[in-house]
Amino acid sequence: MNALEIRDLCKSYPGFSLQNLTLTLPQGCIMGLIGENGAGKSTTIRLILEMAQKDSGSIRILGKDNTENISLAKEDIGVVLDEVGFPECLTAQQVGNIMKNTYRNWDMDVYKKYMKELALPENKEFKEFSRGMKMKLGIAVALSHDPKLLILDEATSGLDPVIRDEVLDIFSEFTRDENHAVLMSSHIVSDLEKICDYIAFLHKGRLLLCEEKDRIM
Image (cartoon, rainbow, N blue to C red; front, side, top):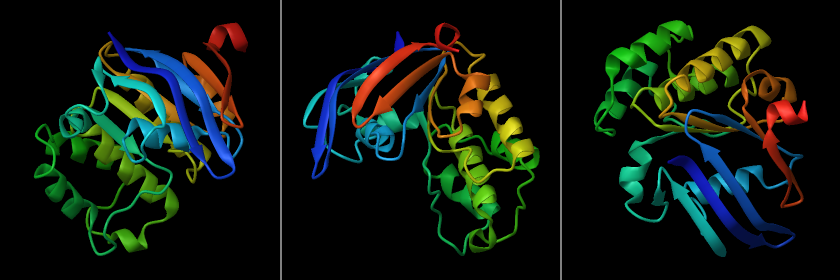
């Protein structure tokens, strides 16, 4: 079973059109989405997550259409978008307590492990977090409810190089379980070179290339 199957996906906005996108992400693999701003990376992710309605085409997540039982599907998806949003008054500890009542498979011990690994303060309010700290909190939350698929939109942006490498190692470790997969958009090509099995190039809403990394680099 593939983690993600996209077939002939189309979505048009004024001034932009995603055209007939077809991608397959096998389980146990990491796919990197590369493209300039406006290439369609975030649009693709929003369509996968049902944050926008596609015009045509199909999206299957872990073998199921993404419009079927979306609340159950989201249990199996860990998401980090380019803007991580939690109420500004909450601490990381309070975020964990809320997520415990949000996800059936929430594991507080795993969350605390990632908080320690990513050097996140338990009792500092979210409004006092740097962009990098916000990203790290988003990553800790995404990984702590036993997801099968991670979807990351510029999740390493705002992180200094040392922390970026630590986070990339976490993503690589995640896919050592062959039931896990990662879809990761980034403009930091060196990050994708380090960990991706597949690279997909988007340009102006069109897929120019999708190949195994070793055949490209």
